[in-house]
Image (cartoon, rainbow, N blue to C red; front, side, top):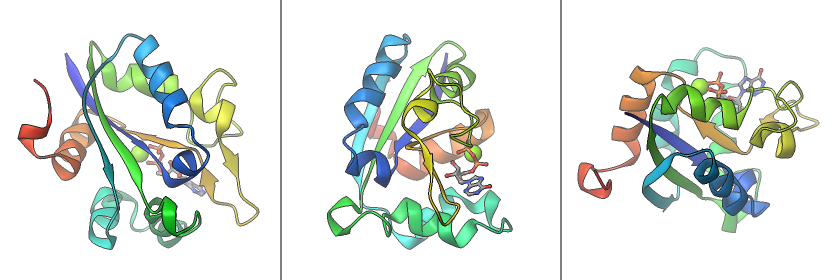
Length: 149
Ligand code: IDP
Ligand code: MG
């Protein structure tokens, strides 16, 4: 059994895509064991994306995940932890490729994602990339007692 972190990003919250995303994840057979709405601080954003700090899109990414492009009331993400067999890779399959134009049409990103005129990938959801990232990210977003184990 693996655990993985999903975030419904500010574009997904603004566009009311949290329910549809949860529906797809539930129906793919994963079990939801943690959930909360989070207003993302600068610190949390930078820690979450620490491994990408040298990427040219990093500063825009920090603004995006903090909701800077989606209005004051959408300064929030829905953080979810799903559990299941091979969940990390399998959830990535449901979520789709990073670039929404390359994501398969039946994935969350392929169905709902877009690239803005500024070149930002607004791809609706985050999903942990591997076991090491999943462990680090879940610790960052949740206290141990907040997950149903
Ligand atoms: P992932 O979310 O599929 O794991 P990462 O490479 O970890 O992809 O990148 C984190 C996030 O940064 C992406 O989900 C996307 O929002 C943004 N991003 C990644 N690559 C690019 C890019 O080339 N241009 C603009 N935004 C990008
Ligand atoms: Mg990643």
